Amino acid sequence: MDFNTISVIGLGYIGLPTAAVIASRRKRVIGVDINRQAVETINRGEIHIVEPELDMLVHAAVKEGYLHATTQPEPADVFLVAVPTPFKQEEGKEKIPDLRYIRAASEAIAQVLKPGDLVILESTSPVGATEQMAAWLAEARPDLTFPQTHGEESDIRVAHCPERVLPGHVVRELVENDRVIGGMTAKCSNAATALYEIFVEGECITTTARTAEMAKLTENSFRDVNIAFANELSIICDKLDINVWELIRLANRHPRVKILQPGPGVGGHCIAVDPWFIVSETPEEARLIRTAREVNDSKPMWVVGKVKQAVADYLQENPEKSAKDVTIACYGITFKADIDDLRESPALAIVEQLCDWHSGTIQVIEPNIDNLPESLNEAQLTTSENAKCSDIQLMLVDHRGFKKMDKQLADQKKVLDMRGIWLV
Image 1 (cartoon, one colour):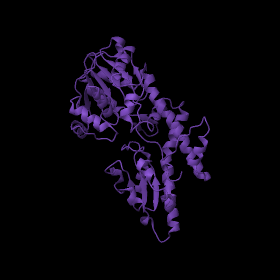
Image 2 (cartoon, rainbow, N blue to C red):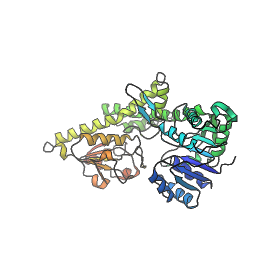
Image 3 (cartoon, rainbow, N blue to C red):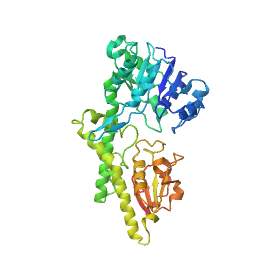
Image 4 (spheres, one colour):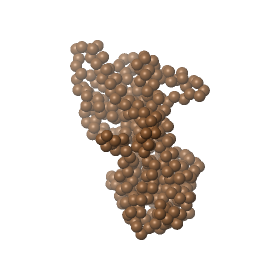
């Protein structure tokens, strides 16, 4: 099956690397994004996100003419939809999936669809989202036929293939990881598989669209449940005056035990969101998944409480000082180590709450960004060297550079280590 032109809708942390990897296989790729600044940056051969190896890949693809970006969809043979799928919360209801970006993308690409085209939803989605996308496409293009009404004989093929990559390793994992491909029909699955075999070295496994959607949600919910166990364990150990890092290290010496490391919460566009997609569809059945989400969602507030107690203890030990004299250094605000992504970041949420509460200085040490978000206008972006003199040291994200810091800092200041860097 020939795919002469491939369009990627959404040029964010998944869409841009996918577009660049496909372009590196000497396929013509059209990247589409509503962010004009991002489009202009890409067309200069540069990138607007932080991801190892991506800058060289994009530069080469643009220079060689295989990749260009635009703000409006253009005709293509394949459309890969990689737009955000956040959740929304209505009063008195569960957190529910927000599919407005998928709908907007569907309505945009519908205008340039032609018989024989393939549309693949890559966005992590609740079960049924691929069918909903196909319905939006059909509504916009009644002159074409789609799998939900014409099965294998449809003009347009529709499938779902969720990404399964780790930030910081996206370029490599897009190529090496297995892909689960769920078509609305067998012909849809086969067409999508032919597309991914252009650049995927891992195995492409076909299934139904609904199973593919649920597979991604299951993977992230499994991880969320295990992280929740570690986070709950850290709270228990704090109350019992036990070093949780030592405890986990000892427990993991059991040949069939592998406890994860606790942290300040769970962030990112997948693990912090995807379990709610399952809960929203099956609220009575997803009891464990819901509880894990609640444990992880509540961890940032627990961290804020620990900081407030540390400030109170400091002031009790230094009665000549007031809260305005206390400086808090917060190490990291991204949702995980060594990236610039702030989406659903528990560290960012913690620092935001501290800015609202604390009357003194709050310093932020975040080597992966150049400017603080507007929500942290009251904070100061600084370096770890400048922050060493701060009264309260709060470790939130285990960036590589932080691990090289002098551990004697923990003996000199009030330290709250949420990543086990200083207090292991």
